[in-house]
Length: 165
Length: 391
Image (cartoon, rainbow over all chains, first blue to last red; front, side, top):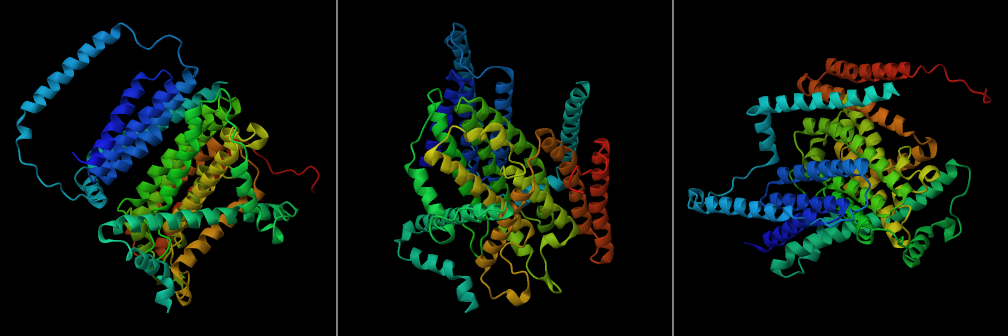
């Protein structure tokens, strides 16, 4: 474990915990954004430039903003009065511990750990583009069609409301 | 001689790095690049504020600042001193931490974005494979800072300004990126350095810049409109419209924090203009073969100053848009135009060079422009413009 990895890991985990436990929802979103940034830093540390920047662009640039909009449009930004701790937490923590134990047990006993680590391939953005346009062109087209349909659908919904007024 | 002046700053940096002990050299080199970017663009910011105030003054038939120093040229220094010595007021109910962090979250990404812009031959601080993607990715953080500033002030005007800014930035990010896609397709690379190299050379007397192709011209205009909206410049300055929202998301900022917002906004404009130059205006290349002896960084910065002049001119000329006009323009006009422009760039790429290619691509750009314009204007049922008194 190297120093940069340790710093990013601590930052990501702390902000993830804070995102779950802070009282003010907007603070939670900001902490969640730090978590997203931490993931992006992990990708960059693994030399996956394209994934790292896409993570920043999509999660920080779009998903975080979407969450912010959702919070501000649906409820007041005032923090709730009552404590966020409740009795169901005990059950939740119990389930989380069981799942974590199960997963870590399975990972530790898996054969993947004993396999020799292969040297990481040098992947440039150009190669990713070539692969997307040649080998994975059909999934790309399908996703493109789906997103375009969603875009037009969203615009039609927004337009309809306007005519109604 | 030409070579020496052109590479002056590069050789200077190598000479300075030579003084550092072996293992510290990469760090020292990075620090030097960072210092150069910060000093250059902070200086350019000071010059731009005085140019903008003088220019707007000329457009509005007044003098502009003329008291500090000869012709008011020392005004930025006075402004800077004022910003630093002013009391830093934080509203009582404000969210103190978020209120403090918002200006920093704005300024750091805009400086980062400047790092990938090639400012001269061999003068790119961070030459990476996915540079254009990096530029747009760090730009995403500025949206968050605007929200942080508006929300943490606990002021209705601030929150309204922040929501306007977010809606505007998200809407215009789509045409901004889509208009840049044409250049990425043509150059076949996401690296700003490769894109500038792809625009080297001349078609006869004219340079091989992408702006001198039909899709490039349309792309450049669309890119600069989206850039003005993205950096909250007039006529897209609704988020801070002083007559409507006082100053929008930075109403509650004073002193140095306000100066940081101001700096961030101008640096965002420089960065996005720099990217526009890189993508469409040939980066640091000279416009004519006989002007090649002028150093590359001089070309980059003169192009940058020219674009800033256009921004000032537009600000002094056009009135502010209404919010529904702003959204309608982005989704009904800019988006279809950028999509057909991508088609035009694709056709340009695969047709053989010649007059036929020009005619087909020009049709693909002009026809949707006219059709969209007619359609949108027709739906609004606008008649001929009638002047009440000016006739």
